[in-house]
Every structure is written in C-alpha cells, then in structure tokens.
Image (cartoon, rainbow, N blue to C red; front, side):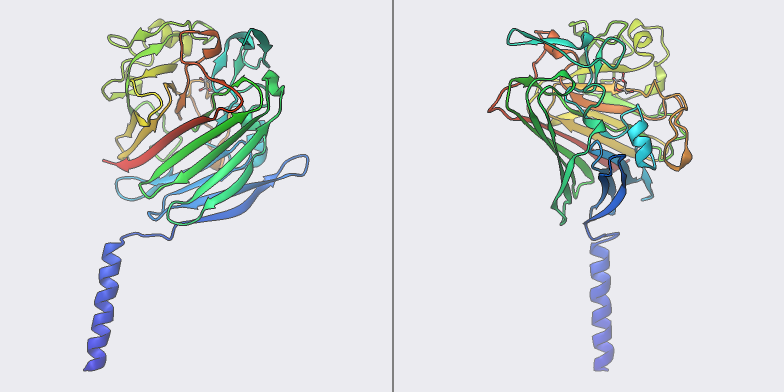
Length: 378
Ligand code: GLA
C-alpha cells in the first residue's frame, strides 16, 4: 500500500513538472567545425538553443547567421533564413546572406567622403559606389568567437579588428558583435565598436527572412509594418538624394500592415529605381533607445517577427537581386524575392549628407547598437 502511495506521488510530481514545462529544452551552445579557408584557418559553427527549442547557428566567417529555426503556430520548427550549406559558397557568395556587414552598411556615393577636412576614397564594389564595406567587408573575414554564456540565454561574442586603411577606411576599428538567443524567442544583436583614429562606423545585420519555412515561396504574401512616416529617396544608382519624403499616399506606406506584393510592381519611380523595395525608412523618434521598428507576418504559418532597434533607419530590401543563380541550403535555388532583409542602420550615404544623423566615431568614443528580432505566432 505504502509503495503504491509512493509511486502515485512520484507520478503526480512528474506530471506536475511536465505540465509546468511543456516542450522545455535545456538551453545550450554546441560548437562544431564548419569548414576550412584556403589558407588553412578553421571556421567554426556554434548552435545556440534556448529553453523553447529555438535554435540559431552562427559561423565565425562573416559573423554569419546560417540558420534560425523558430516555431509556426502549431509548434513546427522551421528555418526562416536564407543561406548556404558549405563554407565555399559563403566565400564565393555575393548576397551577404546572414552576415554582419560593415564598416559601412549600405552605400556611399562614389566611395568618397570627407572627415575633418580630409578626403577618403573607399573601395568601390557596386558600380562606382561603395557598398557594405567594400570588396572584402566584414562579411568576408574571419572573426574570433567566444561563448559568453551557455546557460538560460545562450550568447556568443564575435570580434573583428579591422586595420587602418582597410577598404580605404581610416583607423583601426575593433568591433564586437554579441548574438544572444533569449528566453523570449528573440535573436538579440549587440554591437560595440572602438577606433584609434577618427573614422566612420555603421555596421548592420543582413539576414534574409522567409517566415513561411520554405524558401521556395516568395515573400510577397508576408505582411509588413514599418514604424516610419517618411523614407529617404534614392537616385538611379541607389544613392540617397538627401531628402526625406513622407510615405503617405505612396507605395512606401507601411504604417499599417500591408502585403509586400500589393504594390511592389507599381510604376512609382522609387520602386522602379530600387527594382522593388530597397530603401531606407526613417524610423519614428526615439533613435538611441530600443523601440519597435517593424513587424513582419506570414499568414500561412502564423509566424510573426517583431523587430526592435535603437538605430535611426531601417533598410527594407525585398530580395530583388535574387534571380535563381544562388543555390542555397538543401540545393534550393533562391528565386526572385524569396527572402527579405530588414537592416537597422544610419541613413545611407550619411557622411555626404550633413543633414542626416552622422556616424563619425572618434578615439575614446564607443559605437553601440542593439537590434532584436523577436519571434512569436498569431
Ligand atoms: C542591400 C542593398 C541592396 C543589395 C543587397 C545585397 O540590402 O540595399 O541594394 O545590394 O544588400 O544584394
């Protein structure tokens, strides 16, 4: 009888614990070898898992997110970012899948800018312009990776030291990027940068999201909301003109959730220049504080991504240059508009636009950015 009572108590305790922690996983970080660069250096991959079983994989080549598995409304975990299976493809790729880009995310007209009266010529890699840090930007270098925490909220810090003159930029810059997978199903990215000479710094994260869980689907059915009343128009070369244009009565209006495909092919000049959406939105006031920037929702899976940042701008790029030539994970060729980027940043070509918030970094100052991609369902 006593034994029966004991067994019953143990069983009830087991049930109670199981009910309190449905689907609980032990948070962890696991490390593996992802590949070897031509010069023999090893590239590692860390897999961060949180208590809900959400996982993110990060390689130290380009500080790149290679996979991010989050649940749909039925709890089914699927990968929601584009990427490649092998290191060679990351080395040869031209799409910046999942990487940290910099020193300067987005474009600087003709790669030219002045700082304290001195002119600098950066590498040009997008026609006559400088894009995403140049020919060998932060996405094409090996970072040092260090596990900061493998407990409740696993986090991985990556560091890269960019030498004076790299891609034409002045000063030696040390950038630390910390990826954390929080208990609230957030991928949190904290940046911290310093320099030994006055320079410019404006890094961003370049994941291509497709919340449907299958990258054969276009992102045109995703609905997007951006917390912005204006955007920065561009010229034909995608260089900002220096103006801010209200989004009201234009296809750039995402103040309320709107299907991305609803107006993307309109004959609106900015959409023609961008070949779709490839613009910087001016986030509502609060730059310097972490506030909501955007919401992306995929109706079939129910996945919702809410983005927060302390940056002044948000580049929404609708994957217009994807054309099926990039073969991605599991051999899937990424077709036109099958992934989209939401890049927190300063406004493009800032150093040449004195009215835009500037990104000058001086010795003794610390560059900081926090951007959070939070995943839930509805
Ligand atoms: C950014 C730019 C786009 C394009 C992609 C990479 O988001 O705004 O114009 O260069 O990166 O292909």
